Amino acid sequence: MPTKILLNGSNGRMGQAIAAAAPDLGLILSGAIDVGENAAAHIDACDVIIDFSSHRATHALLELAVARRKPVVIGTTGHSAGEKTHLLTLAAKVPCVWAGNFSVGVNLLFALTRRAASVLGADYDAEVIEMHHRFKKDAPSGTAARLLEIILEERKLTAAALRHGREGITGERTSTEVGIHALRGGDVVGDHTVMFAALGERIELTHKASDRAIFARGALRAAQWVTAQPAGVYDMQDVLGLK
Ligand code: NAD
Image 1 (cartoon, helix red, strand yellow):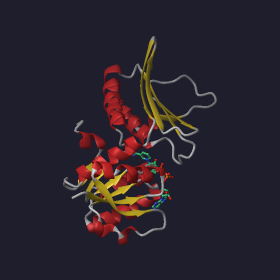
Image 2: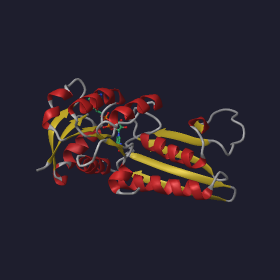
Image 3: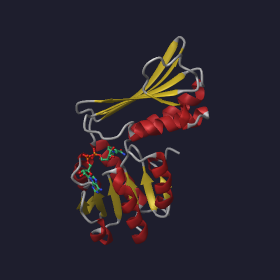
Image 4: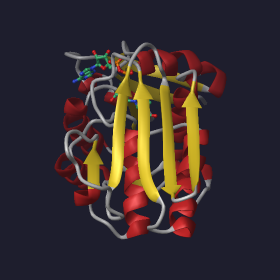
């Protein structure tokens, strides 16, 4: 039996990519909804919910998933740190895969970034640069935010270390700051570079997405996987067995 999906944000770029990729991976849409439409009307027919919509939609969708005990895949980004903490508590009541990026390549980039930050140490200045299409509504991207989290964890720093762009007389760079720079333009699907720069050498880890089908396929793989899991919040590293 194919896994049945309730897709939230179905008119969007990701919604359309998921609808297009689902049949090849053995999943079908039992419901497809967008802004203003009622998720509750479709919830009973689905095995799993996939959400690629707006950060404003996540809370109500998770409340519905918890009430009806349905697994969820959340791909939507743009939640504030406070919002996310609250939402994760709710999400943990059902099987939930939450990932800022569903691509296999980016998930390998996460693992490589952790290794590089650990081996290179604080003498290597860490900066993250991301670029996305002109229509993207939030910055920095969820993927960049995850890369930053990994660097902060390895360097034992807090979010106070982050420098969102630089302007004016900033003074010399300190070893306890991590820079983040968001570029926007054209139709770029998603580029991320993590740079570790020391005196005399520089390492750059770059991933470039050229087709959003990679996120769609990853989210569908997560949807199939999560239906067999106990309640809890998982990420793509769990789905891919990278932990
Ligand atoms: P988009 O703007 O093309 O599509 C978003 C869709 O959601 C639109 O059709 C919009 O009408 C709909 N929507 C808005 N508010 C809604 C609501 N309250 N309820 C239901 N639908 C609602 O955006 P996109 O490029 O498809 O991206 C959607 C989200 O997914 C963004 O947050 C984006 O950053 C994120 N994203 C995540 C990944 C990942 O791998 N995790 C990859 C790409 C995009």
